[in-house]
Every structure is written in structure tokens, then in C-alpha cells.
Image 1 (tube, rainbow, N blue to C red):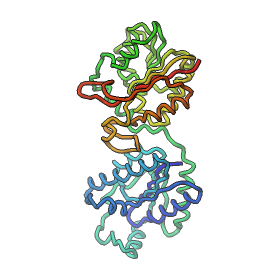
Image 2: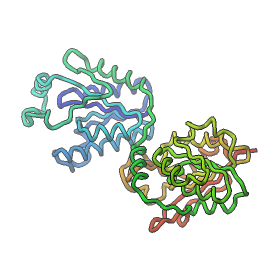
Image 3: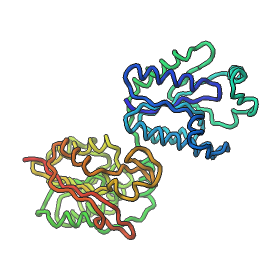
Length: 379
């Protein structure tokens, strides 16, 4: 049950106390946990950030990138930190699967009394904390943590809520990015080197299913080669553009993913083709896609994949979301070849060939490290 529980509230709301109780209760039921406190992290990170709003927001993003990274490795992370900014709420909700935002609400006069009894004395130096933050209006869980409630009870409510919470289909901002991209971008219309290499070995009149067709250039290329083509993309904007650009080619363009169209795609294709899309999927989506691709192929049919490798230099750029996940312009999950082969085999495929290297997908000045895999559905 990995995930991130962010416990927020104004100073002296009891975040750290409740957070430690949450960690204890989760550990007592056998979950691997990590507890992080915002004040401790600021010190651990060398106090490199100041206290102006933009500096606080930047630091909060660092906190939650760390939380996401730990959660992606199987931990339940409990983070107690104020970090109450609209920008952070949006980032957290978009980028952290199984994330839970908990707001501890305590009347100001009680918070001031607690502060007087503590060593922090925050309210003495900062009289108007309310103006410094964006108080959450729609937390996942609101707890009134005044003197009528115990930290144990508050923690129990959080743990129960977290355990019952279902995992949403996290988009990582992909839909908005690709909608904007296809509405403004001028993309190459000639076939990719991968499509050209695949076409060289194809018998005539194959039934091809393309996953993640983008602007449709490879789907159009295969159709002009005489093949029957069905092409999918999660981006409705991309599919709308394809239907307009290639209306004369009798390509069946479908908006959505493989699982949405599984019934109509079953057992009908000689080839599933996937170029530069697998690394744009979170892991669970990739696994579901490979399983659906297996079902879509006739016995003896093949899947051909090209994707960015973990060894591509781009894998060291952007915001770190997980060990292989980055946001650099948009979300990517860079692929480890051995892991991909194992997932293909788990889906039922026989891996026929696999290569990794440069010189395969050159585009302008970009020569990424890519993986190419060919696998077959047994007869």
C-alpha cells in the first residue's frame, strides 16, 4: 500500500505529533513507512531556501519529489509540513498516485496558546500567518485537531481513510500537455526510421494495430504500404487531428487506450506496433497495455516496440518522480531493457530480439538511446 500522506496545517496544529502517530499505526500493521518533517528536511537540505513565498514553494516541490521517489519504491511516506500553496496542491494531486492531503484545522487562539508553551514561538515573530499561505479549501480529509481530540484518534482516522482509499488513474498532467501539443505543434509527417525498418520485413496486407499513434505519420505510412491499420492514442486532440489529416486513407483512428477497446480489438491483428509511447506510460498502464496487446494479436502475431532507455541522457533531466520517472516538459518513465523483457514474458510473449543503443531514432540533433524489442504471441 505505498503512497504519500501529507499532513498539513498552520504552525502548532499538531502536524508532527499526529504524523508520528500515523507512522506508528501503519507500522503496527506491517507497512514499510518513512516519516518526514518539513522543519527537519529544511535543515537536512542545508537551509538553502529562504522564506519568501516562491522560495517556500520551490522547497515544497523538493519535499514532495522526495516523497514520490520513496513511495515509488514501496514505502508509505508520511510528510508533516505546512507548504499550503495552491501551486503545491495542484502538483501533489497531479503527480502523486495514492496521495492523501490531510488538513488539521485548529482555531487560531488555540494555536497561539500552544505556540506560547512551545520553544518555537512562531506567532511572536510572525503575527499574520494566515496571509502567508493558501488555506486548503478542498483537502481529502479535514480533521479538527483541537483539545477535544487526541492525536491517537486523529491518526486512526487518517489511517482508516488511507487504507480505504482507491488508487485513481493518475494522469501526471499528460492529457493537458498533449492536447496543447497537438493544437499548436508542427510535427514531422514523414515516417519514422522505426516504421521504415519494420515495413521492410512485413508480408503484404498485414493487419496492424498502432498504440500511441500521435500525429498518425507511421499509421499513414503503413496504410500507404497496403496494410490495414487501426491506430489508437490516449489524446483525443491527436486523434481528431489524424482523422482530419488522413481522411482519405481509411485508417480506423480510435481515441483512448487498449483496455477501453479490448473487446473490439481481440484476436484480430498480425502486428502490434508501438513507437515512443511505452515510456510515456506509468508502469501499471504499460502492464495493462502489454496484456491487451497480447489479446489483440492472432496466434503467431508479433509486437514491435521502440522506447527510450534508462540510459538515455534525458533520463537525468527534469523533476525526479521515481527511480525511472521524470517530468521534463512532460511525464516520461524510462525503460530498463531487462525489465521490459520480463514484463513481455509475463504477458505471454516470446521475446525474439532486443537491442539498445543510439543511431536508431535520430531526429534533427537528437540521437536518443532507445530500446527496440520484437516479441511473438505463441501459436
